Image: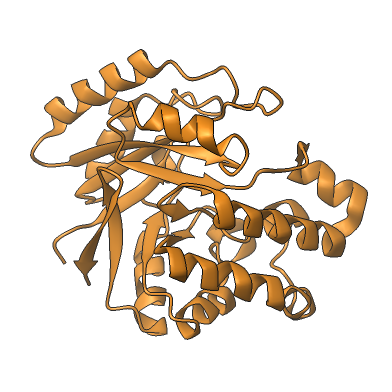
Amino acid sequence: MDCWADSHLHSRHSFDSTASMEDQCRAALAQGLSELCFTEHFSLDSQVPTYGYMDWAGYRAEFEACRRAFSPQLALFWGVEVCEPHHLAGDYEALFGRLPLDAVIGSVHNVAHQKLRRLVQERGPDRASALYFQEVLAMVETGRMEIVAHLDLIKRYIGAPLTSEQLEANRPVLERILCRMVEKGLALEINTSTLQKLGEAMPSPWLLRLYWELGGRKITFGSDAHQPQRVGEGLEWAFSLAREVGFSGFYTCRERELCYHAF
């Protein structure tokens, strides 16, 4: 395999990490990785926690220093993870058009400006799941991104994998999400950050197989690491799952274009 990549991780340029980019890169080399894409949290929405944290000049400077320092052993790319990119979509498009980013990852962390943890507490797991997936559908319909991150993130805040009943109840909207992703050429991320606590990645094996059955062939892999000890965690397991489902390879993102790598 020509590329061993972690395409979703964070550093101190995200509001919820204190890790230096250098430490993340050293951890990647220790794990045998050949490629990283930093995807720092970013939002233009003043009502979400990521707003106002990004220092673009600082992010770019540290990234470029690490890219020089770790070449050629480790290929480095940079991007952002945007919460609810379908809100203020035109503003994001204008900003990102001026930046030489490699990847934009779209994710849902809030529904109507309510954090998912509070949503689960106030509405209960079943209703929260339904509201969450409706927001994901809105994101893939009108948001501009290359990759959809942690598709069933709501389960992290429920504290357990979604039940078969919850999945079946949401199957119509899930199929609409996945079909729209296929139509738009978006990649589905296999995010391993819930593997230890919940026993499955995001999306669940059931959802990944549904994506395949609906014609989805574009996947990426990400540890979502916020600390060096989590870089690359679970990726070998995720590669094996993807092969088992039927995928012949995976994608990374460079200059806002998805690039295929065979297993």
